Length: 173
Image (cartoon, rainbow, N blue to C red):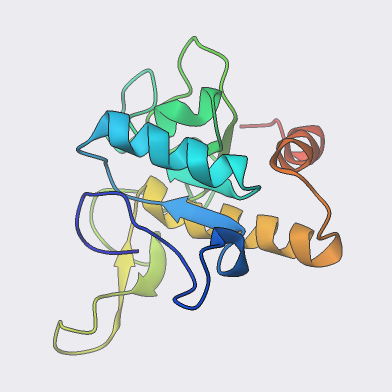
């Protein structure tokens, strides 16, 4: 994913077919152009890919954009702590029904071993890993689960994936 706030175009340079490159698209950053983001997500979704977005880290009662589009396309991901509790930082699903799941996002606050050990930009000097927290840390984990589901059954549609995740998710959080 690019570091800009504009939607990322994911495409095989030798083909116009998006799905030859990606069947799982994750978004872990806020979108500036909401209308453009929704059009892009709808386009990706219509081609059979599933869009997975971070819910946001403002402790709000509803998800932030682009995850708020999960009611139309894709999945929103909130964060849980290492103890399986809902992260205080994580935006909640809100009152509108959306496809909302949680994954480990760290404890929040001070970056320490209670958070997720993740990669940093290669342009930053030093060790290429640091502790981070937030819903963006959970997005790759949900994306990985979806990728494994597609490896096991490449014929799954985005609707199948959301249904299976909902039917098998731990509802304890």
